[in-house]
Picture 1 (cartoon, one colour):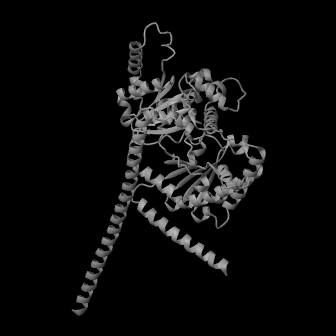
Picture 2 (picture 1 turned 90 degrees about the vertical axis):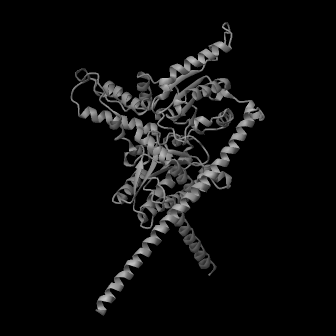
Picture 3 (picture 1 turned 120 degrees about the vertical axis):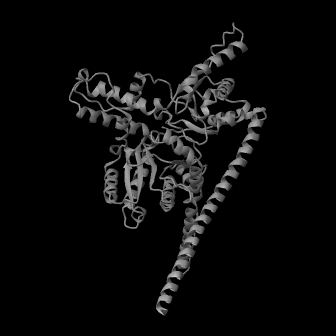
Length: 276
Length: 260
């Protein structure tokens, strides 16, 4: 009986929260809304330490926060969201930590393709971005299943960067451009001449992140001010926002603040985009 | 006759209802716009207050009041990048003043960046003016004059993505279009070597200070800012030495674990 009434209370609070968010969302929509927001989800381990939780629990809290932030973004009509889930550098962590993070990632990827999941509710197409060959076979297969299950969704896009670094992405794009030029060119070097064969557009079309436009805002939690090898190529015009909270503590108001900052600087970033 | 009157009345009523509906809709729209402006006014007021507090703090820092800012460990900043909005970079005297401050703080290697290449055009003038100032303030026989010189690298947007494309071209011709049939798996060090071969050998900056309206790196070469701390200093015209010292001090306190 008590459980029923507390469930009902939670539902009422959730409904009120959702209504308030829609009101704020309507006000924000009077100005330009960013098309693409990227998140560096920093601070899960520090959160676990701060709350005296067991190791790995911080990432689970981080996952629920991620689901909430995705919901807020899609409610605000942000069409593309990108998240930095696992860097190639993170493989250097202790093997037990890497193993437990990979298990959590696999579990959550499988959760994504369930009927009631957020990706189906908002019509989100999922991409896995990175050097997926570095992942274990079960995680690779789960990622492939999720991409296949959501490829027909067209309302929004979620790009999950896993086994990703920007420099690895650039090297891969350069390699693919070279292979493409080699296929199309039967002549050898001494017959071609000195002129350049590869330009910026050739490299850009082979980037893993070619599935989305450049991000308008990159949000990194924990107050850290570096990009840590994330979307370095794509962030020339991105507004960088570093709130001091740890990732599991981020909420709707931080997103509102980021969008307001974006709107404040919109005329400037548009002007600079047209000039370049 | 009556039916015609009824029809006309209903149509007039329908028109009036439509007008009221459009008025509510546009007022609602106006109401939302008003609330939007109020939200932005609150944010701008907040930034104004933060700016005022920042100015007071900068003044106190530059008067040497805080011990921690007097004992700055400048050796931690091996290479500093300063990215300036191209329109603001036209204020050459302001850029010169900034370089003077950086030299006075003890920095020796600085990279200046702006998107359009404005700073490349002023590089010669800046270097000459800095050298002249140094010559006039130091004695000619001072052996430490050369050591205190600021080494200046000046780059622009074309040294970013286009440089990578040129390096890709080098790799294509070296490995893929040569008569050598073995095609390697390209690595990051191949890329670094190719960039070095076309003249890009400078190290990655530890810290980047952005002078402009927004915290945005404006296309600074992607290959060089993997772990660079990026701080926004505001517009160049309102730059303060106290804020500069605070930014460098903040950098010296950061601990990076590089993903591990």
